[in-house]
Image 1 (cartoon, rainbow, N blue to C red):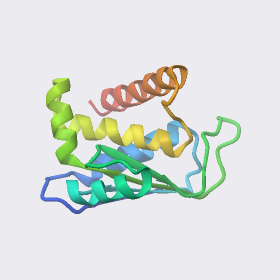
Image 2: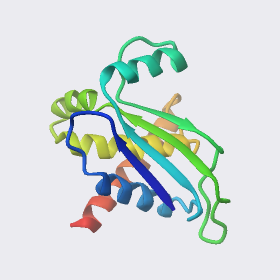
Image 3: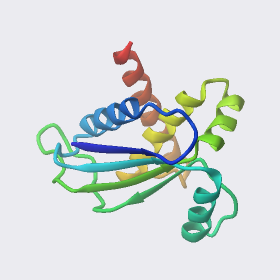
Image 4: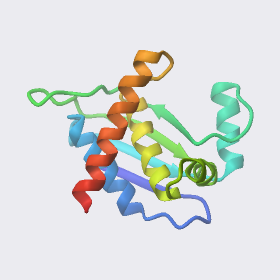
Length: 151
């Protein structure tokens, strides 16, 4: 499994933590070990441009997901086929504001956004209340378990 982490900002980002999280989540979701994921950290202007181009919404956002091969979660008996999961783009500056409002660190917020982005790449959504409940519960469980296992 390959998780490529790129930081195009002045923020200090530990790529190993985000790579480890990506690999761990994909393993939990039974995605093929031959799959690839990219996580990019960008400033507000580049993510605002993506936000406008792909969603017709103005201003920077926290995270955007760009699926490639439309992989879906597998099962213990049948992991997904190998492929390119896609790209996640995160804006640390927006994450910092959200973290302050939520009462946790910017890093914790960016880890949460990473899990959120991966779930979007795997087909999860939160447009409807029942979808939101399922997705947010799963992202919380995945992140808390990852953090607990890391100590």
